[in-house]
Image (tube, rainbow, N blue to C red):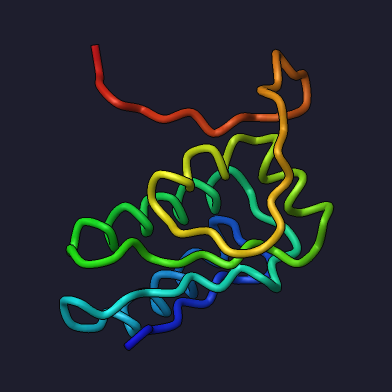
Length: 122
């Protein structure tokens, strides 16, 4: 059985509690797969993107199949998430469904804060 976790249309620190409640409610038993539904997302802050990645990692640690993630339907939102590096990191945590553009790695940007994996602290 697949349980639904709704990603808020505007995902930031103010809507994180709504997302966390949806994640907790979906909880499910071991072996149940989670579907993170972001198809209606219109915007996400870096806080929201990192929160979504953290939830995906937590769901994956429970065991079983990788959680599912539906990409936003809005092409501008998908483009922003791609440029920020979200889908590069999400590919390791989720089975991503929807159109995700293949993008070259972005070099330095004055306006874009990229998602950066923290693998160790030195």
